[in-house]
Image (cartoon, rainbow, N blue to C red; front, side, top):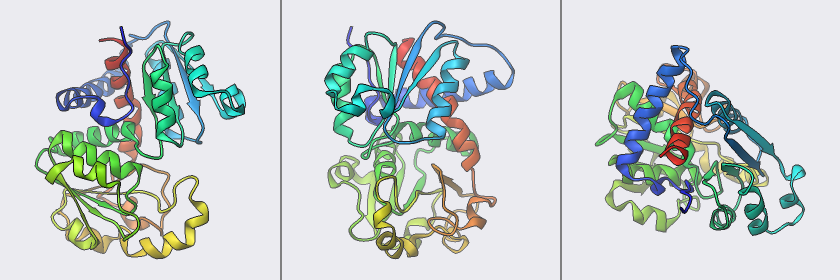
Length: 301
């Protein structure tokens, strides 16, 4: 049987996504009660990191341990992939030895090639194009705090990056309005934007984006590999900093999210990320629970 991969949020259906969110909430409650649940006993995850990580590594490794399995961490220094071995060859070999592979890399095409030659499920733990695992955690967090996101308004402020692309996919699957406020030159991929139909739209004015929003989301102005663009990005994105003033037009009970790490005083003001609207710590924790639900979906069904 062909393995089932999770390279992009639309790799699962809207029905599966909603079920996964609710399963993540169940698994979180199970853990809080101290109940053991080990559906992956004897299973091994290979974790390939070409980009550094805190939350991704800790959440996936902890998920496997709590599920009774194990995880092997592989950096570019630890594999022949980092010394030029073809992706196809690495995929053929590693997938004969482990039960699932998680990859955090730069080019999205690389993870697609790996999946094409893998005998086991491959999970996208971040590429330059998408970050679907983060959206699982974000949507779980919203549901926990506010219930169904269907019909709600989400404001994305800043770069039309991989996180923005995954939010576009989420809007399409979960039927919410996504207002994307980005400066010119930093728009999301037009093909991904078109795929959402009328659920996502691009504007320039950040205040228009946050007006009436139930959820406000942002990300760093310069992602890994873009540090040399920092000054140009700082000038372009300064009006898009999420401040208390920009949160004012949002709903009184609007939530604020950020995938972290955050730079206070750049993409978000300290009084927002540390203030009453912020649920970033729940969001970060939920990487663990939502990814456990994903592992169940890919390996136990």
